[in-house]
Length: 289
Image (cartoon, rainbow, N blue to C red; front, side, top):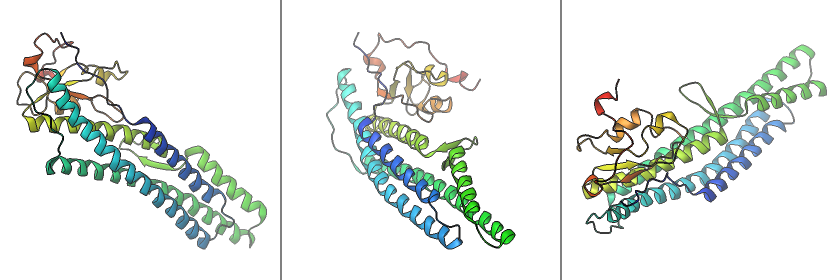
């Protein structure tokens, strides 16, 4: 029996590392703008926020370019994988390297979704910076009202408070529905991994649908996630048209393809792999139990 391809989605580690490095540099610049404020007046706060906004705008240019290239590359790679795997299994399919408007629309949609998600993280950082600087202005106003002036000692205390706040919580990129706070770096890593995997899998699924195939195989790479492990090596139906198999939507609802998940779906034709045995069949009717 031929070896089934069940490897996880592979991202471009080098380019991802370069983007994370760019993120870190920008983050340090933002923090430096905050902790090196020389006075705590409203006018200074506005200028500092303007400087931070420029740093984040420059960062977004790099991010948008990365997203556009990476998402398109992964999507097209998934589409090519679909044909390669079909041919390897013995399916009579022609090599297709073109991408019509439907495919391009799917790529554009993924790019836009990902760029908007990154944009939210920029807003989160800006919001936190605005809060910390606003707090410093309020502390300075209080000190001025109490003492009539701001002494060097008061300035040091306010600056120490700023540094303490940054050390304790950092600048939050996003707070998710569960209340978890995501740092800029953690959120970036998660989003790149999640959206990159989604792009690759969607490229595979759309190409298969275009060619009239409906079943896929979930990759197996011995992950630590209980929700994912149960789906490894299993056949899924893309649309539900192929009876006897859970759908991709069923698996997703049950926990597969969660944030940071790298599981791939691969072209799989049951009729061409009669000797293949899934680990254990999952009955569709039991998914909601």
